[in-house]
Length: 233
Image 1 (cartoon, rainbow, N blue to C red):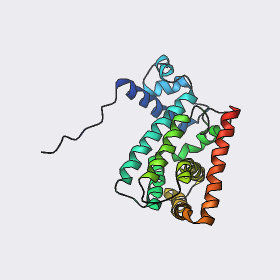
Image 2 (cartoon, rainbow, N blue to C red):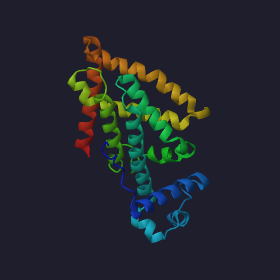
Image 3 (tube, rainbow, N blue to C red):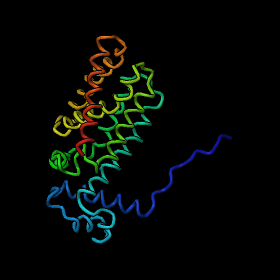
């Protein structure tokens, strides 16, 4: 007999309560809008007291951050399963993005609500905010796994900075997805299918002097921007 297959631990009562509050909030956002959804209404929808809702989430913004964190974890789990056995860099990048689209299919109708708030650079819901750091870092690490699990060769400096560059590319895909009204977001899927090969081929050809210089300049820019943001914070 083979070794017993390990199973994930069942969610605790607290984790179940957090999930119920997030799900209740999302359904209310869809029905009445983000601004009209109060913490009291969210608590009532979740079947918990207002005090209990505030115990887990001090505000609607923190609640959304809880959704971001949960969503990032669920995307990671789905992507890792879909990536198993795939070594081609183009296919790995495409698979990672498609996994995100499919994981978020149920949230597409009210994604614009999040976008309006997240587009404010001072909002804690901004994907670049300190509050969003856990979800952002998980997504960047996901791209690092995409690269490390591929058979593509590239200069070490590019390999180190590429995950964050790919996360920024993903943010562009997400913005397009929010505005996509095609059936089953077919336009977003086409955008992924058409742009991933172009971007990944540039990475794979980065060993060539002319291409390497351009890609290196781009990843260096990302690193310089990050250092500037840190120094100004």
